Length: 258
Ligand SMILES: NC(=O)c1ccc[n+]([C@@H]2O[C@H](COP(=O)([O-])OP(=O)(O)OC[C@H]3O[C@@H](n4cnc5c(N)ncnc54)[C@H](O)[C@@H]3O)[C@@H](O)[C@H]2O)c1
Image (cartoon, rainbow, N blue to C red):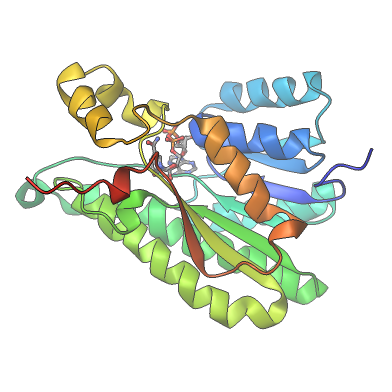
């Protein structure tokens, strides 16, 4: 039986762990060939490659790329075309956060977050689009932003600035790239169980009040996020561009009068 992503090639940044890993596995399980990007842990990437192969998923290659480096991101897209013959779907998932009181944030901390979360998304999307334009092909971009593209997160100002930037970048490019048949959308997770928030998961003093703020009463899973990404990357989502899709168990809507 034909699968939804048969014949499609997807690059998923930061796909050696967490949400990116689940997205790579999900797209591959529906037939996509995947470029698994890792920054510093090849063993994580190979592990996912093995998982996908064992489950009968699409073809995979692993490529080392630090998305904050423009040359690395161009190479990631180039490898997709050279080794897999195309690059139809780009999932900008790689991201980092650095918590600190605003008055203590250093230039180095700021650059680290903005370079991965915003500059990285900007330039890899540029490389992705150039190839599609030259080959006259349509494409899909799905950015993993955050509820904090819109919702405040005190002590994470650089993270909020980066994700708010990704929101506006996505909206702008949806208009500029629509005529090329390229759609762009954001998936904005709330609290998802992954390594990025290990500190939170282990700290009941912080976790319990958060859970009380989530109407569905639990954190989300990477697989739930991956399901939404798969929909937005599919043919069925062909008329959707320029939007953010929140996946947060109701967190962002949960305002109470005191
Ligand atoms: N987990 C959550 O609750 C949550 C909520 C909202 C948004 N997000 C977003 O989801 C995305 C994935 O995060 P996660 O929760 O899976 O955490 P994670 O730490 O498991 O994953 C982040 C991935 O990005 C990669 N990465 C970091 N810097 C990189 C770089 N310079 N180049 C290439 N890869 C790099 C890491 O190696 C890792 O694979 C991030 O963009 C994050 O901001 C997560």
